[in-house]
Length: 338
Image (cartoon, rainbow, N blue to C red; front, top):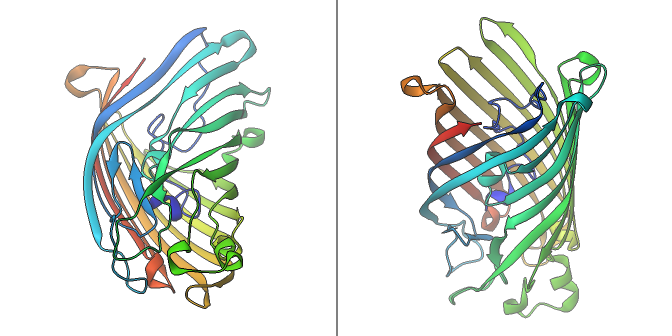
């Protein structure tokens, strides 16, 4: 579901709760441990034919009746648990870290990052991390099976993320991510009696390359704008599942001593490589989305705490109705920084 149309394939830009911005946080000036933990509850209403959910919650319908209609909506709620633990070597301006991001959580991608950040002489920040699936996403072994209960399989990913922020003392940042995607069981099209050649066109294993450019514009009085541009190459083994995606996003951030408000809008277009053997046409998806995050800082005078509320809406409209996808996401949580 979300994994087909949010960050890994198109719309990059949901606020990172670790710093309420998209930039890498400054490295502390003292040695020692630091980080945050975020605990809350999430309500999700989604429409997808491809993703089932994960071990913490279900989204997709186990039984479908048509390959030509769009998906029906499913709802679920689950706990939100994420955070980061880091250790700083202040003298060398280096920090090692382990954790995950809310922006991955909303796509049922519980990716965990293990990496290192370093501050260069010009005050720019570089980071490199190993990215892996802490909780695998569950997808359907054969999403095209109708009028019977579909079985799930785990989709795992691992790879590398590189980031350079505040390049040459500016507000420019760039992030590159590589992921290798592997399904335990890939049976797409088996129930339809497709030939081996046609089933190969639907193979969802492969790798994903994504690159994002962002620039923060300070507008004064606590306001800032951050446009971003990204390209995602989904190099799946199945040529009908392979796509090039171009995405644009704009984020407005308002910061005050007591509150932060972050509004994000995204648009993306995904063009697929080969004709889909089930529908005899090549897939194209248009995607629109937005998020709003409100942060209440230091509630009741507790300086290390924040209260957060987050609303997300994304919609992916495909020229093949079966692949239409949408998600409505609401969460409330408490974040503690240490």
